[in-house]
Image (tube, rainbow, N blue to C red; front, top):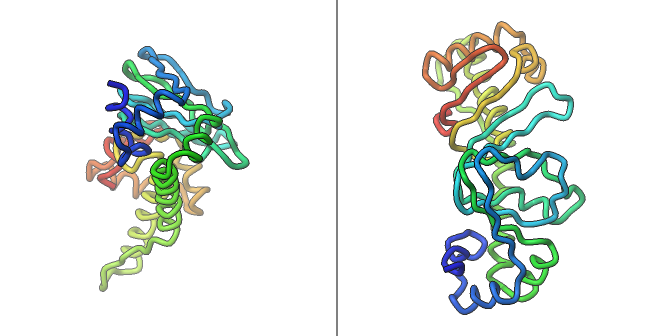
Length: 229
């Protein structure tokens, strides 16, 4: 039943069956099926709506504004995609999204979201909590401290700091802190961003490869599981 599906999603958790059935009755919800390999969102498309992948696996692709590097993430449902683009100044998708497997998705337009926000206290609290958690996590990442063990030499401290900065660079640009990621970037470009020589970047990335954290190839960093970083 469709109300069972809604009840399992973060923005609808805590609602009674009656309230969920009322939403299904009075809210225009588009239940969409996407074929394997199909691109269903393009970077720059108008957002301003709620898009939730309820079943399947997707590939999210993002790139820097200057085109110097790009990141691909493989994510499994359920996923709420860019809820921060529903309102505010920038209502555009920042990622291109492709179906890796057959995908089921829910689309709710802004007008319908506004109705639910007006009618449902639980929906208001769930959406506010979801967005607040994302904002708090981003701010926490900016102030995260690097722990350097006592007794390290200056060279060891430098390596630890650069390793931390590379990991932070990778983590802060991903939608999800877990799963498979592929970063298309030259070591020279990464060095320029972090204010480091290419040789230093190469040394740390090769160290990460030896530890099984990444796989390196020409202008590409393949991360089997970001959580291991």
